[in-house]
Length: 274
Image 1: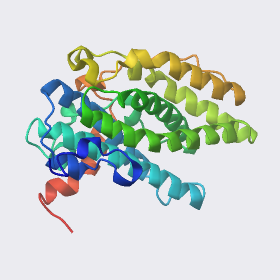
Image 2 (image 1 turned 90 degrees about the horizontal axis):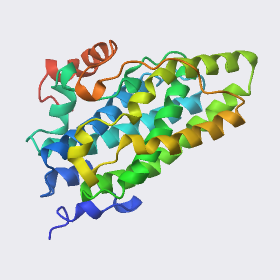
Image 3 (image 1 turned 180 degrees about the vertical axis):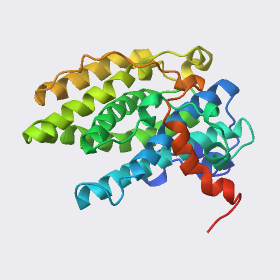
């Protein structure tokens, strides 16, 4: 077996599974697993694009670097998931990132939401990081070795994202009157999109043991959120949930504008490189 073909089990930090390994390996996902990977990859890709906006705009230099690093981690996760999904349809990661139309994306609405102020971005990061940690912690046991290997690498990085978000929630909530007001507002704007993360789409039945059933993550997520918000002297916002549908290709009004910006260069100069 060649080194590339053995790469699905290369999950240690110094020898982690890379998108380049996935592109070369023989393993090809079935259609259901590919569509599942596509959704996870789209979440990471769209979130990375949102976080990238903060580069040069964060409230302090250290935070500028931190959000950029989190965005790069998400780009790495997106590349792996999209590369693996693309093998089912003979498409590259770039094909899937830059040459799909809005209804073909499968991202959840939460990652599509505008950054808002820094507190709103932190509120979104708080929810996403805790959700992704719960998800990847279980996906490492996937019956699909490539998904398991991608998750094994991702969960270690998301653990840092989780700690980063928690520390900022506490810092803002227990800081000044103004920072607390903004943190509460950020949570209220974020919470309507939480439910979609834990909604079981029919696809999950087709994926079987290769995936993780979203609803099974909810109890652990709620417990982790409750612990942090109690320490921050905050409450879970009592707000109505938003209508989701991102996994079905029904997106918020924000995604189209983002894709136009993200895809314009690749579509203007197909195949360009530097």
